Image (cartoon, rainbow, N blue to C red; front, side, top):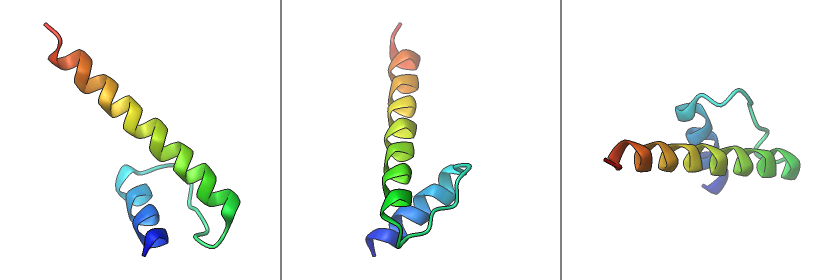
Amino acid sequence: MHEYLLVAYALDQMLEFEPDPKSLTDSRLLYEAIQSSAFDSAETRFYAQTP
């Protein structure tokens, strides 16, 4: 289930990388991409809400 959610998130975010869910290296790279995407999203929302 965990791997499915990671792949679904990657597809939803249109990340430029198609992970192999059984690969630990791909899982780590995907995790880093998700963290980066989440940080960018949070940073954008913070600046948008700051007057």
